[in-house]
Length: 91
Image (cartoon, rainbow, N blue to C red; front, side):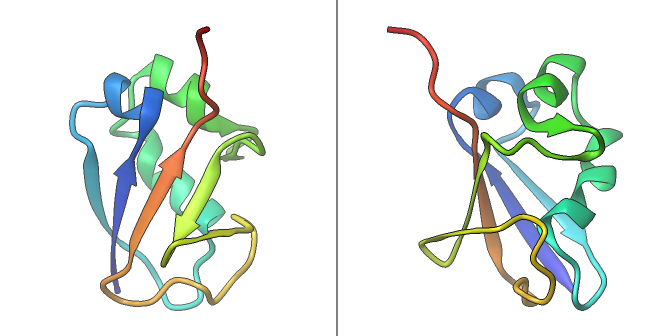
């Protein structure tokens, strides 16, 4: 199934593109998508999004206008758009 990942906030500024479309297996969790992001992302982007091969706990994963647990399986469906929002910085 295909899932589009939309990068928001600081992640959007650090990425080559604000959207990435990935082919993922049925039942995949958001954390399962992280290895596919690793090859495309810059070191700075990885620092913002990833920790220990998983999505950082501080990054909000938003699916169908709701924040979801990145480790939860079976939430993603074919054609979904998942938004990743790292914490805001600055002041």
